[in-house]
Length: 380
Image: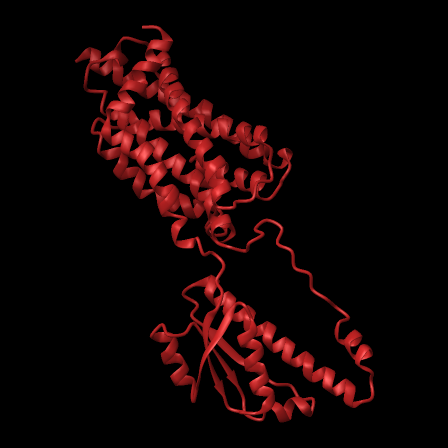
């Protein structure tokens, strides 16, 4: 059997297996829609806010109007106590609260410090940050207006007062996530993890289902079989990766900082090492259902140790060190630095070399495992 015939035989075996087709093609396409779908409206705005106004003065009402004018929050009610405001949040009718203390207007006019209390539902970080950011901005605006009135009362001109108050201006420009949304932040790393897991599962199912059977895989050497299998899966996943990194990135407005050649150069050892790891992993099983069960169990740990969902500095060093055996970990971190943060190729060189080292190591393990399985079948 020639090498080209082997590749066609591998592709035929992959496409004839409904489980592999559902995992590889169905999983990639399904998760491309499922995971980002809840975050399409990714920037939280108009978060419901209730106000407890113990002052009931013109300045407290002005502060409430400033808060309601913010794009991030919307004042929906005034309540009489903090306990009542908490009940609104607990029942989901509101996401945040603002407490204006008594003598708010008097203390401000006398130049005394005033403490505004605000809070929100911290179960959702984006919602909580939107409430906090909107209230902080409203409080600062109200304080600036009071300072302006004080300066005018002291005889300062309107232009001079404005210059004093606007000595420092904040110009906030997001560098790596222009929309400040969840989708551009989570999608790039998550898509690579999906490719990693579906590729591992697909190659593992194919190998585990063949070791006790007879077929074309016994007509070639272990080295040739591994090369043919890697070529077949690389052909499929080149198309699927292009769909993710190309169309899906564009559709979900994910920022693209790196050139096509650099992205392709990084993804090449990532796909090769993952394919080789899947073939090596398949040699551990003779039941086709076991690889899927094992790999699904480790999906969530890989997600956290990859560094884009949870800071690796807060994960035990031993766990981070152990996670380096999975191609997804250096692959995701290098992809985020290169393509989302605009890092130079030299900065991701350690991860790139690590991926190529994984290609050599997992290929050797795949060869050893495949040879052992094929030899065992011949002996039987």
